[in-house]
Length: 109
Image 1: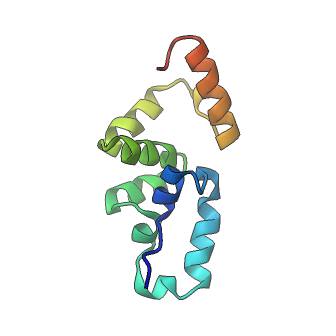
Image 2 (image 1 turned 45 degrees about the horizontal axis):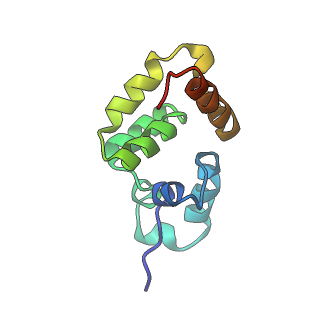
């Protein structure tokens, strides 16, 4: 039996977008996968990351970035909350546009 890629792993490989997390959760609910694996593991999060995401769904962006950079998620979540409210994107499209704008301003690498 092959290993099912977690949601976070799929985001890191470009086969899923953060906005698609609800679809991945539906798959967990609608198939037998949920009988064999907890939701947070299926999503690719540890219990702390899952708790952060449950409190604020926008934390998914920090969680994915932390996995990508092999860093502690708290570093990225605190960065997110230190940003002005207007800069907190609500969707992948907004995130892409915001990232391009910040790079153009020299605020991001």
